[in-house]
Image (cartoon, rainbow, N blue to C red; front, side):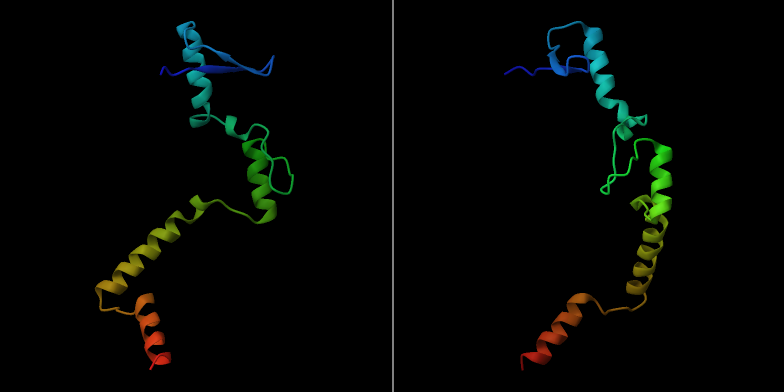
Length: 111
């Protein structure tokens, strides 16, 4: 079974088979597919769940600020410091874990 390649034609709104086509078309299709890796194309036509237009980086940033929202990457340092704190706790004799609490509750109520 051979693999097929297609390119979206925005003028006709259809997918065009370029499997056996011009290598430049193949390259163009690959670049269009990977454009989100280095550009802002992933914002095109983007809307928030409340319908707000966030189709550019600037609009997205302003929307997040206005609504008090954030993205997960804002917590990278918080999670790193929490991981260090957990490691320190367990290395310095901290022994209480969720499983210990569950076991104690089960033991207390199932005598």
